[in-house]
Length: 180
Image (spheres, rainbow, N blue to C red):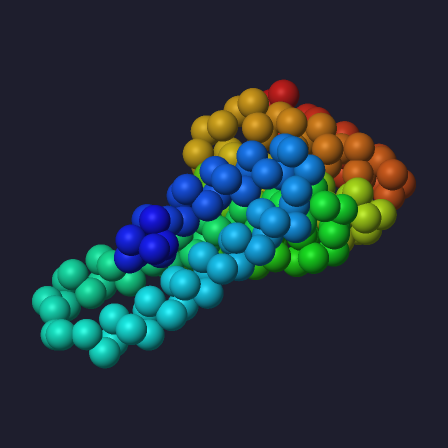
């Protein structure tokens, strides 16, 4: 695809699928390299567009928005691969940043999933106190998009995290909020 000159935003979904397959086979390093190459290609393509023949403003905006969407998706996949590789701090930091980008772009469901990844990564790294706000953000996002199952799963993780921190009353309030 790259050799054929296909725009990076169209290569991105293929690279993300490839990355998930490679991670499943245990080659996270190769998958991360391909993701980074595609992100670099997106950045280079954005610079090249400015030098091209003038185009209608709405086409330029549409293409820029599509590039940004793909960049968010690639960064989200990168955060998931980092978590798979056990690089929990890097995964949590990137996932939180991507979650905020998703939220700013109105992709609440994607933001919730990224906040959840950030929270889980913080928990797995032993940083329960840092995970609480992330898990709460994930719960709020899932509530907004009416994903009851995901919200319940996050709530269970949040309750367990709060209990590990000795915050029994807060844990009980989360449980009550789900049933009420």
